[in-house]
Length: 109
Image 1 (spheres, one colour):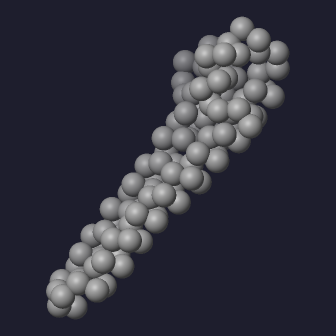
Image 2 (cartoon, helix red, strand yellow):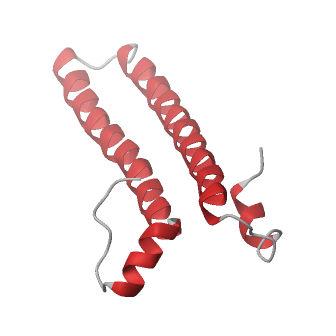
C-alpha cells in the first residue's frame, strides 16, 4: 500500500481517476488514525498502570485518573478531527461543490 505522501509528490501528474485515488488516500487516512489512536491509548495505559501502583492515597489517584482520562479522550478525538478535516480537504466532490458554492462541506467522510 502506498503512503499518503507518495500521492502528492510522486504521482502528481499521473492521476487518472480522482475518486479511485481518493479512496486509496481515505484508506490510508483511516489506517493512520487507528495506528495513532492505538499508540496514544497504549501510552496512557502505561501511565494508568504507574498510577495504580503509586503510593498516593485513593482520592489523589482517583483525581489524577479522571484528569488523565479526560485528556486522553480530548487527544484521541483531536486525532480523529484532524483526519476528518484532511479527508474533507482532499475530497474531489467537495472541491467541485466549493468551486460552485463558497461554503464548506458539512458531510462526514
